[in-house]
Image (cartoon, rainbow, N blue to C red; front, side, top):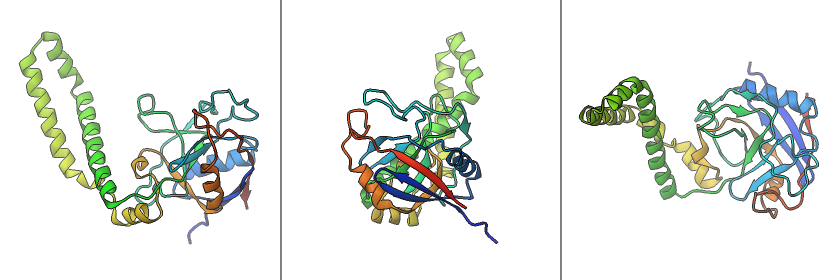
Length: 253
């Protein structure tokens, strides 16, 4: 028998959002429940709102923050390991996802302990999804090439130090060849599955974030509240000019 999924109700100054937390992402689920029960989210703001993209909250320094305070860096000093369950869970409209720091300082894509976002996104055309697949293919090739460069780093450094430009050029071509071969074998990874394409065309979302950020829940009720939040006026830092406060997050037992 399947364990039933946890339901939480987030009460905001614009209304209530009911969220379901996935059992397939247990570390994110348990962490969110722990913070909710500890009252960690009470009084925090939706500090970053970008129309047709997402609404973000959970910065622990956002409580009672003056308007001129720079928000977005506040956290709890630990991270949650990434739990990508793609393509089962993806960045459709209403998805609850974990924010995180960028790849250059966080190659493992570990999640922020407290910051989350809810996807609003937009609807994509078939052409746009096709272009996105090309970008995904480029991203896949780049990641393969970067990994191979790391694997061959001692050899590259040795040739670099000896000034052997010819051998370096040959090695570079070899790595490009290996990249192309591996990318061809893994080309399905750069394809957006048919059922996801349909959702992105009809309901909308943010497909280019798939496999980059952990999706660990979704909105069950109150999507109109999420929409109302994404429509508010924001300043140049994407912060709403009138505070949208998370009054409480209650775990339904």
